[in-house]
Image 1 (cartoon, helix red, strand yellow):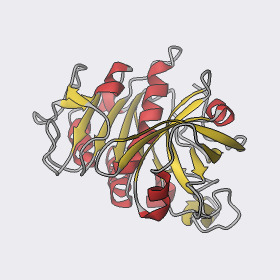
Image 2 (cartoon, helix red, strand yellow; image 1 turned 90 degrees about the vertical axis):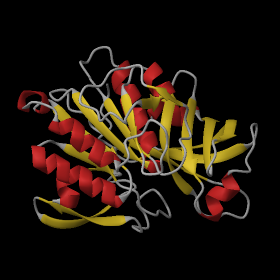
Image 3 (tube, rainbow, N blue to C red; image 1 turned 90 degrees about the horizontal axis):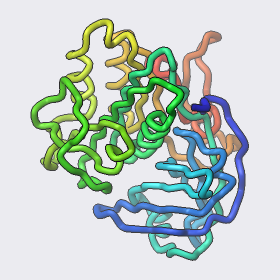
Image 4 (tube, helix red, strand yellow; image 1 turned 180 degrees about the vertical axis):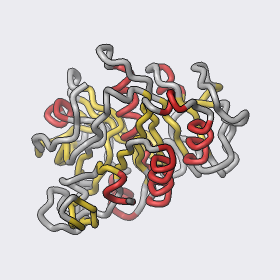
Length: 293
């Protein structure tokens, strides 16, 4: 697969709404015809959308999928604030201004083909994009495992898992259907009593799985995570415990989305010392050690 670690071209293009479905609990699936963005998108990159009349600031949304041949991108978002509330009113056939793809994405390590993907809440979509990209790479030896956590009902269909995953807790019986159908084993965690889910944080599910591996098995594991800050910190802690490489995708409020305003800057540790870097263009994906130590 092509690495997403370097910034690529960013396009401003009109994007036609193809599908815009409510998935419950304020969650929406949005499919757009955006050929230039779709052709350049990589897992971990995002788009900056104009949400509607009277909303001057764009909103950043992670990519769930990109189909270059069809010129389509898919986004899965949860309504937070008036901007995304306005976006929910956009109907098929309408045209949105789309800026993207933006940012440095994940850079999978071929020498560590067991990719442990940990996603929480609105951080799940970029991990689905990464998981499906790895599974589709027939030239690699990738073995992605997606672990997803949510405290609201799943916006994607679930079912009793069809793909076996050794070392899972007994309660973790269900998986995201469409992700399994694309060849990616996955398991779910929730403290909201959702059926078939491990009753704890998703990082606890990851810890359970890692603890069951031998040292030789862990030697080919790398962690990729996206979600709220506490979840990312826990994922980074797991990586330190087992001496695993870990990349994290940060979520920050953004204004311009292209590095001009520096409103999304975070402190990152570099060889030269602390440095303020912009999540929108220097990230959103960073090595976990530079963010969490």
